[in-house]
Image 1: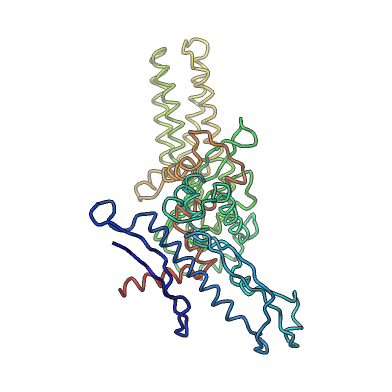
Image 2: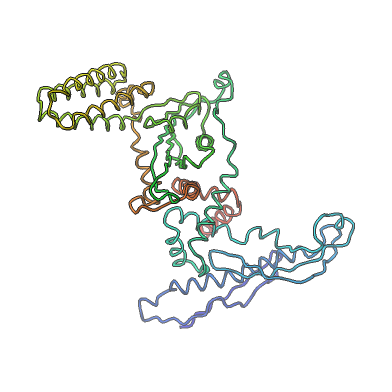
Length: 473
């Protein structure tokens, strides 16, 4: 059978702009399974044909509406024309762009600018369709730049010359646009009077923010790595948000975190709990962020260190059973004190344990005793530095409150490991990693599309219009 698909475009006044345009002419068989319906290549051809005629009709209608002077209404003389290329998800479309002389009336003559102009420059502020930028940015943040090109080529009739470098440049351009609207960095975001906080409405609930870090390989120095901070914010009744930044590149880390919390409805009278591993970088990031903010040491990082010490104690039992069992009991006592938030008692018994190990150095034959003592000394220092951030974990656990950053550990895996391919030792520049993080975090928490709709309101209008038409049908 022969299939012919024709396109008709009707203007706002009811005039026919385009008619009898064949956008698809194919011969189809009906006796084979693989011939039923449109194939992917036929669908691409159809979409590309519709796009060519539709964009040409829209550009012609826009240019025709500006053929007359806006002051006196006189028709403008045409100087010539050029051909512009507009890149869309359905192929590159050449557009006829007329160039017109400005009117000689007094009002037009008073305007500054060249004597000729192209009306389409006010419409095509970019030669790339916003939806194509969105698709490139979204998929490039989820998979590699090369796989993004392959994906788009498989499902869309895009330009065959699209390459990974172009996709990367477009993603960086969108990330730079996000960076350009970020406010100035401030050391303190508490800038109002406590008396005003009581007048604020009751907040919806606590916001829990977990912050942790990871490392990726440096492109400039192949033998070194640089750090990436990853965070996840969990409000009570709102969507989760991700945070990602390169510490050695970002100049506005606190502002970035503040804007993220404000997007989740943060109020100055709202409780905010920061769970961190106790590192200086993450602790400084969360400092002076909100009046009712609390900084808690992650229970997971405490137990991880205690587990290592417990393994040393088990090894000591094989060489000195009495001392090994005594030290193992004291480690359990220290863990119990920390669980109930008694950091002072935990430090006392940790120091006692260190003295006990020191007394064993002369007679004990345990080969890892010195490493045991060093690990214990590091643990004591760790608890001393973060004693102020050790809450009553047992009480928080019974009240169904978070005590560990397991959700952030998974966020580190999602944000860093699954895209930056640490196992393959992929190398990154600090700028490239930071820009990719800004798009990737918004893709993961579902806010990238909303950001594009803010930049290009027509995207949201087209989406709503399509949904309304589908419901009516």
